[in-house]
Image (cartoon, rainbow, N blue to C red; front, side, top):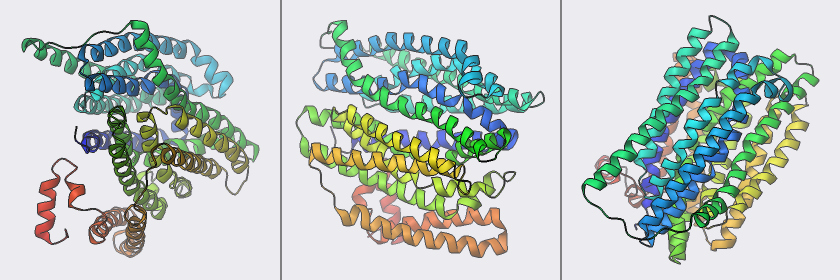
Length: 531
């Protein structure tokens, strides 16, 4: 297998992920303008418990299936690889059904007694069926990823998000005529509609693929393992990852309780506190999630590659993949964090013009979480591939504990209020990133070229930040704030890319790792910008 395969797989998922995130932003940005920060607060209330229950199926199982399928196929056991998939589907069928029933029956208790936000009842209820449909997709995605085929995952993700946007926004507009609570519920039902659409597409791809193989009379070699052994292997990998993935939704649920109550304790009304909560979790976090798409793709793609190299005792290959993965994630995370910080207020005013200008301060405080979160994601994938699933779980729990304490203290400071919760998030990911890096170095003895990986990107980002700020300052006088923001973002991106080329931070070899990279090199060479 080529050592750059995970980057090519990541590119496929990344392209789809970018489209998904663009659609997600297209969903959340107009949704925020349709139902406002108050409605967004109701919309966001159900998502921590939704993602918490969903984590039992979509977090650990795709990784576990991908890892086991990849390992068995590497050993020529194709029958065993498909057996893993079939058993996983049955397990996910049960988990998805139980999760949906729990949320449906417990929605009233959750909103009335846990979060004390009764107006969010219908928004939570609308999410329940989605748990089943999204859970079932996880098995198929893990199976295809284990075969190094990222296309089905990419297609199903795009279709799921497209259906979510169309149905969610459509229902929000229609139901707003009733009241904002119903509108938030309509937006929430978009997740269920997306789950149905995504599952339908990936089912079609799977059965079409099986039909083609059957027509070609392709026989699978290998043997089945005892069902109990397969389930044990799946759970051994999936449970630690699931625990880790469930921590954040659980923490977010607790966090929402802390934020809402602490804001009211320092003088905000329930409606004001709910609006601030919506600005943080529904609006600012929307932008924080955008840069993650590429590093999530890296994390997903790197797991089977690391696992396969480890199974073959190719430790030099493991170290090379780690260096590539972390370097790429840093090149993504650093400019994203700095760019959001430099243009925090202009960006938020551009996207949410009805909200007060102070919303930009929330994004400013939250922006640097991007840098640490992107590193956490990739290093989690690395550690999972190394068979150290419990380590990132432990480290995330430690970071989450610091987050809860910091959020409680800082949110209670009137001058900070909801921005204290943003700082708590940054602290959590910083601690988890440091601990993960220590673990990766301990188990692989990997070293880094500090000049190429850190120093050069920092220089490039510094120049980018200066150019971006100056551009906005100058163009805002001529074009106005909103158009100047768009121009400044474009200039910042061009300057950053130019600096990466000028300082040789990215080279011809890097471009060859991505689809179409050779053509890009030829174009850049003709323009005289590739050295």
